[in-house]
Amino acid sequence: MGRIGRIESVDFFRFLAITAVVSIHTGPVYNGANMDAQSWHWLAAQINQLVRFAVPFFFVISGYFWGVKVRNSSVVAAATLASAKRLALLFVVWSVLYDLPDWYKEVLRGIADYGWLGVVKVTYWRLLSIIKDPLPFLTVGTMFHLWFFSALLCSLAITSLCVWKKYHGFLIAVSISLFIVGLLAKSYVETPFGIRMDFDTRNGPFFGTIFFVAGYYLASFTPNSSWLSKGLAVFLFGLILQSVEVYLLWTVYGTGSYDDFAMNQEYVIGTFFVGLGVSMAALSNHSFFRSKHLSNLGKFTLGIYVIHIFFVNLFQPVDEVYNSLSWEIGYVLLILFLSVTSVLLLSANKFTRWLVV
Figure 1 (cartoon, rainbow, N blue to C red):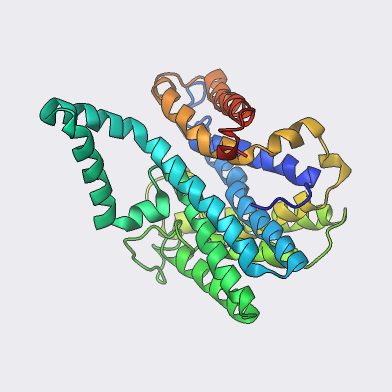
Figure 2: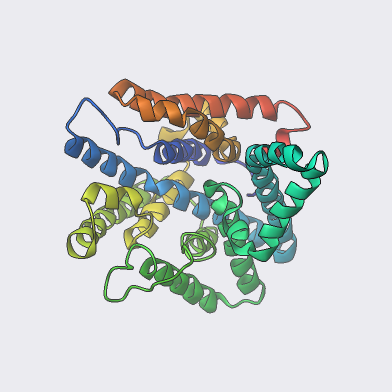
């Protein structure tokens, strides 16, 4: 979101964050064969916890650049509408693209049963299933990682409405309340305060809003190089708090192994500070993070995010067979390389550039 003048260090962190996302979805060293399973899984769990900064960072930075737009132009509706249109379009188009393989398989079966009329029938049935139960599609789309777009749209809508009405105190209260409900229904669900819900609170407004709002309020300050040390301090505090929470939730209320619990939990209280701290460090524009090549790749983060699951799914059968250390590391690099290459090719064409940039 946002076409404000680029900050080189932010693009650098964007590339680090998308690399972290790829590692989350490929699960490096979780199925390693060169170490005993317990040690291997423990290492995978620690890596997973470390890279959990990525999506919160994307929310915060989105809120920051939207906030810069709003504060510069004082036109909340225009800035919001432009961003919302783009997010919604990408969400729908990529949902269609990810659904095409399943639709194609059903169409082939439909043609076999009904002739060419099967194409219409299959398409109608798929649309009817969405209409009958729209919530799964509206919150996740047709592929699990597309939840980010829906959550970002929810965060944008809530924040823009409150900012437009100047309900700033209410905005903070709502974002914190949503975050607490999200925690109690997910990572903290087994505690005495847990809330049982059929809805996955990772999706929708529950987690994304507080990060987006934090980014919006960061936009009211002028970043400088001192934000690096401040951001790293906040990040370190959040990482320690996150690790302690995960350990306590597992030992006191968790079920199964620590490794599985640490791999599957997504947000705890400390995650907020992890995402905020990394975002502050990124906004510092410190010379240490001004890498022209990596920053240039950071411009294509959105495209890498939406397309990389194509390659994860493509190579998943291979990943289930090979589990050596070289493959576990190479798998991440392979998916990243193929995603970057595809995005660069798509961005070079004026008809497909809008899909990835």
